[in-house]
Each structure stands twice: as structure tokens, then as C-alpha cells.
Amino acid sequence: MMMSRSLEFFNFISYVLLVVCVLISVAFLTLFERSGLGYIQIRKGPNKVGPLGILQPFADAIKLFTKEGVFPLTSNFLAYYICPVLGLGLSLGVWMIYPGIGDQFDFPLGWLYFLSFIAVSVYAIIGSGWFSNSKYALLGALRAVAQTISYEVCLAMVIIMLMVSVGSFNLGVILNWQEQFLMIFMFLPLSFIWIVIILAETNRTPFDFAEGESELVSGFNIEYGSGGFALIFMAEYGSILFMSSIYALMFLGGSTYLLGLKVAVISFVFIWVRGLLPRYRYDKLMYLAWKILLPFTLNYFILLFGLTFFI
Image: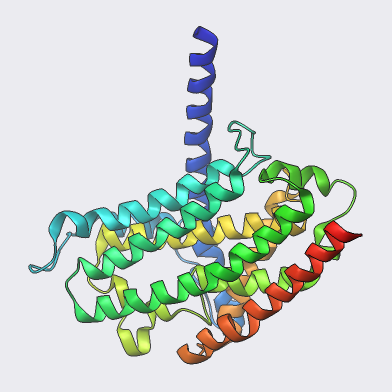
């Protein structure tokens, strides 16, 4: 009994340390993005607060969380404040399934846990827009949910193909399978499709219709300021880090060895695409999901199923 309680306490402390590391990584990812966009756009990024601007993320956090919190008089007050907390909680809770960071949790059905979490994360977005009781926030939320659900279909198909290949729902099995052969050599087309999917899932450029500033004035989070906006912001960048880590796990053998470098390179792709491409058109976004990516993944799955079970 004492040993089991000690193990539970150790798992809890390990997860708390993991959350702290993720939040610090989110802070420096924002600095990395702003500096990277500065170089891409031939301008200076943040370089005044601390050496090389290294304290800028912490200054922004202090500014946001100490500002006066305001809320719309017509909003559903409690739900309005819970939705950003829910979004950040889901963004941090999904990190428990990632193997190789300490293996403090054992998830034999880790992929199902992952799919469940990203499906539930939609409710934080729709709730933020709905409970604000603003037509602009609601319009942005509906666009974001339609986009997220559409690309979750292709995301699930890619994950099913990997599960069929390794024969397990456990993410750790993929790491063991890639000790001899990286999956990116076998699933190179799927690796490119996964990049497009995670760009859409995290509402990043060129698929940032959830925050279409030019036509929606920031979309579903228009009524949020100070701490609420900061929580939504942190949830988005936490999801970027996690999706980058999952890419490293699925295609690059994302163990602790050089994990930070792999995640940094994949995260830079998000920044590079944002500085390179303009926003997509919404009808083309849906056309890409249902008419191009989904038929391709279905045909790839049929081919993989045939190779796996009949050869």
C-alpha cells in the first residue's frame, strides 16, 4: 500500500514538473516565433527586455495577468470564464500519453486517449464563442469547429494506419518499432499530410480562420482580454508543441535522444509557414479536407491494409 501511494505521488510530481516545463517552453516558443517572423519580414523582433529579448515572454505574461479583467454584460459569466481554463487544461492533460519523458504513466490505449482529448477540445472553442453572446465570437467559433472536425477525420485515418502497422494502441510501441527503421521512410506522404492536418487542427496560418483578424476581428476570442486571452494563447501554443512532439514520435523516432532539436525544427515549420503563406480561402480549406486529403488517406489505408494482411 505504501509503495503504491509513493508511486502515485511520484507520478503526480513528475506530471507537475512536465506541466511546468511545457509552460516554460510555450513562453520561449512565442519568443522564437516573434524573432523568426522578424527575420523573415526583415525587421527587428523583441530585443529590448533582457539580453536578446529573452525576458519578453515573462513581461508579456505579467502584463496580461495583471490587467483588469472585463467581461460582456450579456455573457454567461461562469461558463465564459471556464472555457479558457478548460482549453488550457485539455492542452496540458494530453501530454500524459507521451512516452520517453519519464514513462511515469502507462497508457496501453494511448492513441484512443489522444483522439478523445482532441475531440473534446472543440468544446472549449465553441463554448468561448457561444457563452460570449457575441455574434462575431459565435461566427468565429462555428468556423473553427467546422474546420477542426473536418480535419480530425483525416487525422484519425493517419493514426489508424500507424496503429495497423505496429499492431498496438500504445505510443511506446512506435518508439520500439522505429529503433531499426524510421517510419518517415515508409510513410513519407503521410508525414506531409500530417503537417497540413496539424496546421489546421491548431488553427495556424494559412488555416487561421478561427482568428481571422481581417474579417472576424479575432474570431471566437474577441470578447476575451487579460488573463482569459492569455489562457487561450497558452493553450494554442501548448497544442503546437504537442503536435510537433507527436510528429517526432510518429515519423522520426521521437525518444528523449535529440527530442528537443526535433521538436524545435518542426515548430519552426509552423513559424516559417506563417511568414511565407497568406490565409487560405475557407471554401478551399473544406475542399482540401474532403476532396483531396480524405480520398488520399482512404486509398493509402486500403493499400496498407492489403499489404499488411494479404502479403
